[in-house]
Length: 359
Ligand code: SF4
Ligand SMILES: [Zn+2]
Image (cartoon, rainbow, N blue to C red):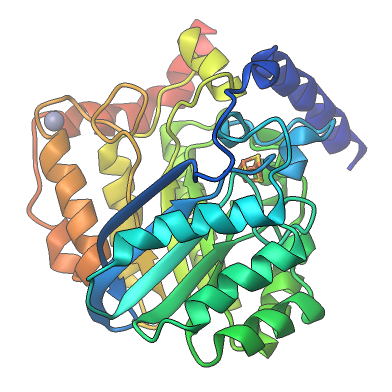
């Protein structure tokens, strides 16, 4: 444990160094407008519907603002604002996003993101949270609500409030489990919580019939392509055994002013291959019990900062992944091929060996 703590301290220092002065350069924004909002077709419960996603502009993730320096791949904090918006301003942000749903037929899903945790009352005051959920509660088209939070903010009293405001709607809380391995989550990601905290939060959520959407990271830094695949596969198995309702597989994309970006710029990191994403998803469908959904909407797919293959096949593979996420049909992941598969397989077989020889 002592060794793990010491390695983690080194990673935290490198992480903070990678961020440099970027935090002080955060843009001034209109505090009554969200950072982003979009609508897209989505699976809502067992039906096809529409999802609104809104990213509220807040001061950002407490973990990233702390001396621990946040996660090694995440620059969400840079989307945040320097001064804390008032409750009224946060509610105004949400109302402006809700206008996207005017004239849309149900079933609808509303996903509320921040650059941190919706359930952290320092980031989203309780008054703002209650008003936002109250707006949702008045809209009968909305059947599903997805919120995001780190596990330390999940407790009986908060979840009881949420359940009583939202009634019998499907509720999911997205939590970044990232890896089931405490060592990988600590050393490679600097997540700052252990598996036990995740399990406790999940148990609390179950008491209120609230599902957990586990974010699983594919290819944190310091892992080879093959080890990254193994880790994601075993994490999904663990998530299923724990009883999460959805797994969202997130291939790392290289975000600005992060440790991952520094490693990438020095040629010491490559985002995962799209073939690796497929491999993990295929494995997840093999052991699927149809109870747990598995989704993946890769950011920057096909771009050099995102999960990518050779350039020729990227669009096809990324589209297949999106189709699978939408309809949960494993056939969408079959019959994909390209010459670059042999290069990917070569990397899986020889990367560790080549690291030993060349570094
Ligand atoms: S990944 Fe989540 S917990 Fe980690 S720094 Fe980003 S917002 Fe915070
Ligand atoms: Zn290819």
